[in-house]
Image (cartoon, rainbow, N blue to C red):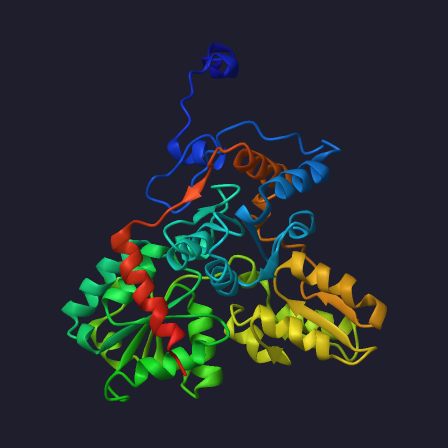
Amino acid sequence: MRDVTTAHPVQDLDVQPTPLALLLLGRDADPRSERGVECPGDLPSPSDPDLVERARAAKEKLGEKVFVLGHHYQRDEVIQFADVTGDSFKLARDAAARPEAEYIVFCGVHFMAESADILTSDDQKVVLPDLAAGCSMADMATAEQVAECWDVLTEAGVADQVVPVSYMNSSADIKAFTGRHGGTICTSSNAKRALEWAFDQGEPSAVKVLFLPDQHLGRNTAVRDMGMTLEDCVLYNPHKPNGGLTAEELRNAKMILWRGHCSVHGRFSVESVNDVRARIPGVNVLVHPECKHEVVAAADYVGSTEYIIKALEAAPAGSKWAIGTELNLVRRLANRFAAEDKEIVFLDKTVCFCSTMNRIDLPHLVWTLESLAEGNLVNRIEVDPETEKYAKLALERMLALP
């Protein structure tokens, strides 16, 4: 028998990496994705002891020309340079309120920078320090997939009854689709108000909502906050013919949930809740509504990132909390309230950062600020006028919610 190992040594194989392999290795880009992987220019070394001073000097040189936004899930090393912190929509609105800032440096992910570009003036330029900072949830609904879904709804005879409601954590393309089809955007704070508005757009018993792209926020809001049942919700899977649903299932549903989720919040389980209760008697379990329905049902409190922060601010000294959201924020809150004798722990034993949020590190921020200070515009995020028009329409509907 021939020895194939000897006949074809590994080092002599002419192996051509697949496009997916190159993408995962960070050596290529997917033009159909909202994420990119190229970062032109030379980044400073992450071990450079002068990074903090370099960032401070570049920011000082730029002065009021730059406004740095820091999402709650960013690293501490980046947050220290943020002019404001908050969730994605708050930050986009903060940027729009600073028209004197020529450059908006968004330390977050791609869809957030898109929203900032939509809401800011044409004279302002939105910059994302690392183009590979995307969002797995936003990527789970592409424009082509959603257009195909609408065709399925049309063929089932229900499209004229459907009002799309899209979570802020979606691409500009999906926001524009929502605007074109009479829908609105929502955040985790106002999802209930957005759904109430949607069901008021026709006879409530006939209206259906297509909720994009996070199934868990849609399900939790409908069932927990609005009194619907799990049977009122169906799950549309874009990877199956007709979304994996029959025309009858679509006709009977009130909520058509897109099969998307947050890779961080989706990790939490009922076992995580039970385990932390066993380990820390008297603990309060507080989770984000992007968590699975059974986790939300097992928790003591449920709310958005801003809700979580405010709840901990108001909590009495000596109280104990297990938080089900991104680890950077949980760790920051634990350090912040340690002096008040508030015990704050991560809900799960498994450490779980948002990997794409963490791509915005100090070397990328330094490179960005120094480039801008030298007059070189890098990594600009720009939404085309047609997409911006309809995405802004959907956002304005949200802003008009009572």
